[in-house]
Image 1 (tube, rainbow, N blue to C red):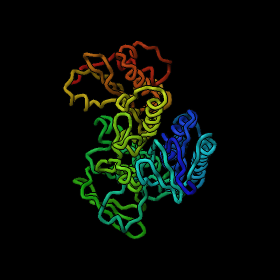
Image 2 (cartoon, helix red, strand yellow):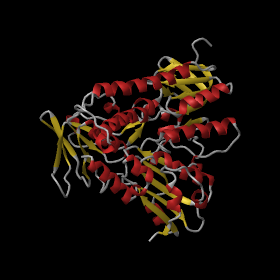
Image 3 (cartoon, rainbow, N blue to C red):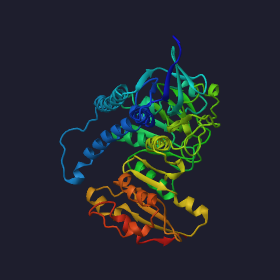
Image 4 (cartoon, rainbow, N blue to C red):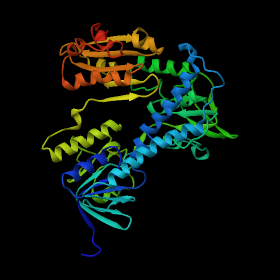
Length: 462
């Protein structure tokens, strides 16, 4: 009837990593698809996550190498300056191309209609976008997440930045204080130190990136401190206050000054899902205590016909796991498969320089199981490729089940570690014993060629 809801076979809410590919696949299969985006196409990765931050990392790396050029016998004359407006402009252009590429892709799909505005569920099959009411047999929620803001005393009186706010800076903070010593915080710490800022990282835990093994955590700290980043761990009773034109963070640590004064504050203490204003309760969709949408092993929510993909479901929080969410849902719906979230092996990176590539269990997690295990280690200072490039910081480590010979986990902190780790990931995914990788011939000189060597030097975990 006139004025009734627009009806579709599928409705995709959000255009982060999972949503566009799913919408395109469903539309190609002949489904009538509605796509809703309330702000910027491409989600966190494109707009204020992976792509822009890695663009900044690349600019900072160029500055870092230029300052060290004499180590390679290259003389650079004149003062080395970082033009932050130009750095931001480069980053913005990379983001613009990605953002507009996703938007053009979605608006050019056959069998698809794009709605721009905030989506709110009014029932298990109905979504309102502004004045429009949409109905669909299947709804796919891909709304992502945003930076969590902790309830710190005094925070309401002090301006602060999150990862999104950092994307808007076109100047160099004189002294950037970062609360949070994990993946996001550490990438910004090194980047802005290389640009020229004074940087202090404040972390409540006893060490940085506490989910990693102690040797990896310590090596990362040494890398950052070696470049002049100050690190304060065991920071208790955090509080902030306005201090002249800047601010101060009370850290109340056992060692060192009781506070850290700086010019700008970055909060990097985790992420929260964008689920609070979706009307989930109207559809009967269950969430957990932190607001993440509860899903089963095939990403189905508590309501039949509704799925949740990407950061909002709490099952990955990475761009690559979000994309895998799309692959799981599409394969199960369209290809007659039965793929599951638990089929994938946890793998991720920390993109400081040199980067950390990680897959599977940590050594500490393996020890906690009590199973007999073997481990192999090598310092990057014993890797030819690293020596040739003048980047010998870090280590590589692999842990293996002594009985099944399956690889349980690995960490490569060093030049090329974010790429070389995939050698291990692939063997683990294939379910093959470590001997397959140990006996594989790799190209020389590379980082990956040393993985078989490490596997040939396995020793029982003490």
